[in-house]
Image (cartoon, rainbow over all chains, first blue to last red; front, side, top):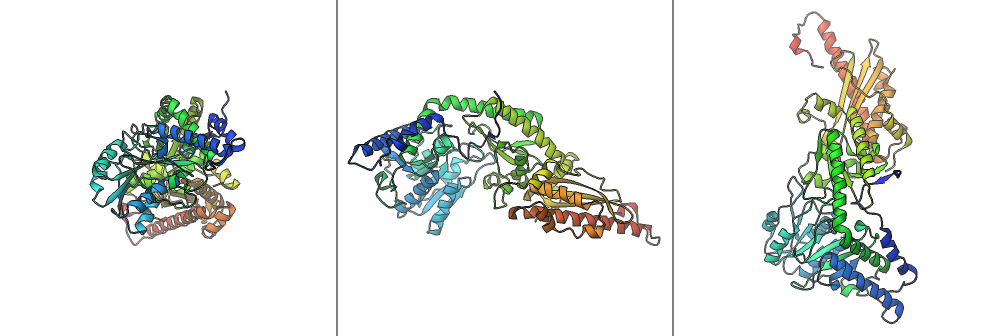
Length: 407
Length: 146
């Protein structure tokens, strides 16, 4: 088999649609195109039946009690917004305090910032050097005014898996609602809303080989029954939680993606983890001064986030332009600030600039991994030859002892 | 963001990568930027007695545009007098490489590196002249360390 370039290793950003998902979706564009809210004819009934089946499949993947607990949205950003703002709106009279972590996705952080503008207090709990939050720190942040805790299942940059069950125990004991942004972790690391005492959970189809433009929010219906203030007004779809005509083909594809993961997820995670370890071993055997960002064990199987000392991330990405990856380097964003996640972990700014995120997924092969590893090794060597920092480090100069002019 | 062809060309075939002995009196060294900001440039020039830049070298930690900017700068420096070299402005580098607005700071850094290398050479030369003038005695350990 010949290698096809470019190689996609950015599966945290999005994933390709699984062909089985596409097959499931196609009839719902042309044949069974009905509006799931049309109660008066067969077109509507067929669409509605497909949506109700889909709810069950999605509920099963997270061990929810029933498909009725699934609210469809346009994606995880909307799910996060609905969870946080919806809870704040409904329970704001009970208290105006929310607890989250500094490494959450912007959809969570910015929703929290919005609440702050509306008079809420938000506590942003820090993480350890390994990129994992301590459940005791979450507990310490709780007050009698706290109505919601929001913590991600797995981080999108460093792939660290958070202690959701441990946090859930504490929030349940205190009667505080618990929202989990499960976008990156679902189907890749154990997630069980009942066993982990999760009350709300955001997920997205396109991160699990489903289509873009569809997501879901799990909203617990029993013990406790969670209520939300709707953020989208209109026809009262999704039990009044989210108005708007349902994206039936997207929802069918989402469900198919969940069914595949439920059946194959465990096997697939093993295979992907082996590829990740292969990439890591090959690179670190050949190159010195490679730092893994985030806990290597408590981590998504497909994630490898590493910093190559003295090599700037965007410069390296340009050198491996046939490989799609991402970097925590400032140069990749308009802000000129390196990744807030890496900085929250206490990483030196220079190392944050040197980070590369490899995201391995379902369709990557061993052959691709070997090609990428060898390419990275060659290019890092070349760029280190060109790096004044590498030269100084090899001469034993402590880079921190130099007075750098900031600019 | 897509890179211009010229940036890619310099990035893939960087000119004049390397180092001169910074303690050599003919060499001027400029080290600018900061690791925390994501780019560091070291630019060196070899200057003859007539004040003409005979050769130039660079090493850069940074993105493709930073590497291309320093590579281009070394190319332009060769054969120029110190005064001519001092007129190289960041906008000339940015224009030549078609840098987008977010990458203008790379060209600014290259200009800073040129100016800093010239300054370093001039300081060394002044120190040398002071040394060769008889009345003031300078002990070896007081000489600038290059």
